[in-house]
Length: 269
Image 1 (cartoon, one colour):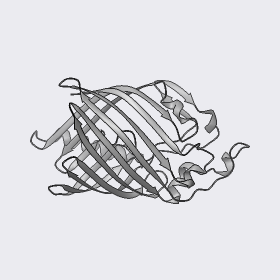
Image 2 (cartoon, one colour; image 1 turned 90 degrees about the vertical axis):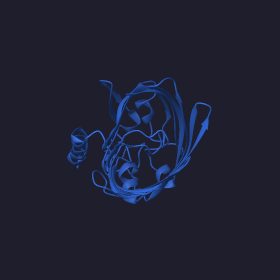
Image 3 (cartoon, one colour; image 1 turned 90 degrees about the horizontal axis):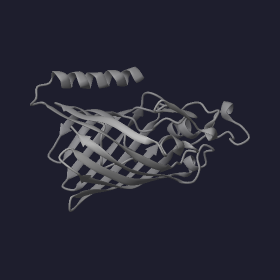
Image 4 (cartoon, one colour; image 1 turned 30 degrees about the vertical axis):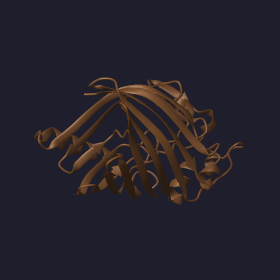
């Protein structure tokens, strides 16, 4: 299925290259920063803590096709790349067919800037691959209010169903844009067990067998953006994600929340 994602991305890019200027809207971003995470998954904060975050992102829209890789409203909670095709567009509302990455990978080893990060607490587990949800998304934007609801089925890793609802309020304070974010994500048992269950081959004296049921996540966050110049933006934010008991009971997790704070800059080409 990863070939499908590559094909979809290649199709979007090829369409953008062939499009005339009056049908193509594109933004390219480059930047970096620092992230501090108190991770819900044991040891996973080691992957980002104390290491520079670098990124190159693009938002592209051609006719009714789009690629979204940047969303300042969402911050670090529930924020993933999205490919889509807009089925309907109204004055305030839209309905789109989307493919998006909802859950990131969980693994004992990670590659980061040509260096390998090993997480001792996850030693011996099979890698949980990132997913790719294919489904529908409804959005509504009215002045400073943003709403979205989406749901679908993963076609890459666990093949479970997920549904999300998200609300963001934008406040302008002098030159600052502040985004107050709230969201909920529901996942079926197949999803939660794929990422947080413990298989027989993974059991040890610190990690008992565990089979998870369906569960939900709740997100609250604040993102702040300040324009430094015509092309440069300063960004920062915090996000807290709380997990239901089926997540918290997993031997792969600790505590009840995932907490992330970040600060950085972005250059808009």
